[in-house]
Length: 125
Image 1 (cartoon, rainbow, N blue to C red):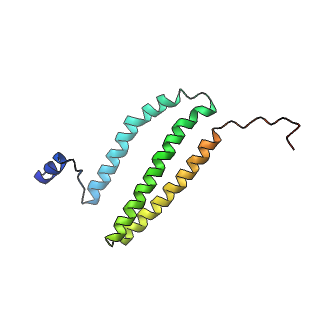
Image 2: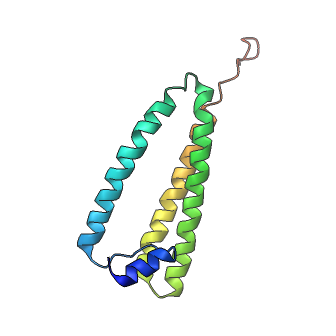
Image 3: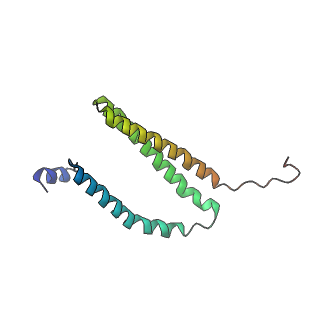
C-alpha cells in the first residue's frame, strides 16, 4: 500500500483502482466475499418464512434499498454529465433505468404477498 493510499484510508476514503486487471480482481473478490458472507445468512433467515405474508417485510425493505440505489445512480449520472463524461453517464443512466424497473417489480412482489380476499360466490360475477 502506498503512502497516498494509507493517508486516504486514514481519512476514511476508499481507494480507486486505475487498471482493468485490478478492477477485475476487486470485483471477483467482492463477489466471492459477499457470496460467502451473506448467502448463508440469507438462507438461514428465509427459513422462518412459512406463509405468504412472511415475504412482505424483506421484499419491502429490498424495494426501498433498490429505489435508493436507483436515486444514487441518477445522482451519479447528473455528476458525470456535468463533468463531460457522457459515455459513463449513459451507462449509469441505463443502470438507473434497470434499477427503477427492479423497484417496480419488487413492488409487484410486495403486492403479491397479500392473500387474495375471499369473494363469496354470490358476489363473484
